[in-house]
Image (cartoon, rainbow, N blue to C red):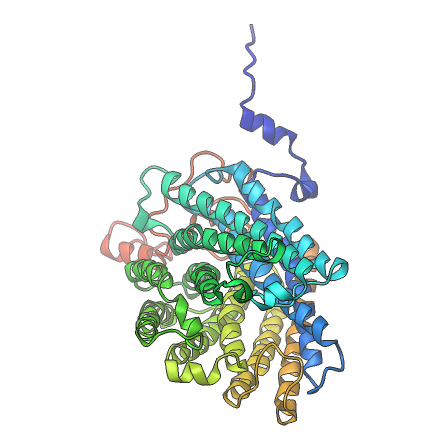
Length: 555
């Protein structure tokens, strides 16, 4: 007699999931599908945010408002900043690569809470559509991505409320994701896998998730109070009704400075995975990399007020936050030297992934140097709210995070699709992006030092040429997207077959098929205790004379 065993609820759920391309448009519970949903959705919003940035640079090619009205310029500026931070960088470096890679790295079949994982993603598309629709329905918010009162209370009230609702949805998505990553990393590690054997991206995501869970609720509560001021005319932050705008700034930056590390720490982890593979060397100083990430997490929570040196902060507060900001440069500098030491003496393959990774190192160091300068009160007072701050910020978040996103796509695209990207197009993409980025933002340091304010559509005519030069760089950045898009779509159907492990990497995601099966591995997950053990096999063979060398000759 045959006994039929009913399927488990998870198996039943998986059997009902759409197959093929349709699964990417479904409420999938597969962490790999969710990761790619994050990636594609984020890139769509990147194209929208990039189009808005192009409109800003077109306006700034002349010193008068001749392309957009002033209020439209304010709306476009607000949408650009909000989209790029909350709908592109944060979801992709956290949600996309985190969802795809973390279960592989800990030896799990999926995330700890698969349904919560799906909910976290599906909050993002409606939040993004809500934000963008405000431009066409009520007029978008005009107060910038910081939404400082009283400007956010007195202008475009309906658009500001929609902005708040959108950011609250996106914040909820981040919190759900952060809880999921912490639980997955700490509780779903396969037996025998120790914390200090995890790939560096796990540590980066663990630190990032702690920041998300601790700081994002503060932003959510702050925006709820701001909405009360707008709708119910309360006086939390409205100075006309006795509110305190400085309190808003403290609450906002308590989240928004850690938000920089929420964007950058995962990029640190991703580049730490890419460099050893393409240098064929172990990651230099693994323990110091781990400790520096944890130090950044702790210090990142106590430096927020360096954004407020011109807001009437008392001298003792200025001194404290100057010192704290100087300290946070130390663990960041440790990571830079570790990356350079990993590159040093390696067998470097000058492919697209390594080029974008090296571009990240160069750009981030330049952004870090200007960040240390901005932490000094006299200098900050001089350049506050000028284009020097714009240049610094973009060197960190675009020159840092976005360059790493592109490096990661080139590195893991064979894992996603089973096919290779065209390296010639990839190198061309890097060259145009790197030149365009630096041509766009490097001159803005000069603009800021000479007093050009940010977030304005009109400026002194003496800055015209430098702004036109910056706009040419922005045009190159926009054009650089075209070969990348062609490369991604063409290679998905016509690209060279990659094989399971085209890079001969040692981290767990490469020890299964490309693309992977639904449950990641056939059989038990591998135990990888040396994810960066490049060259260690050769050393072992030299020690043990009974084994054969790499050429197959008996020693």
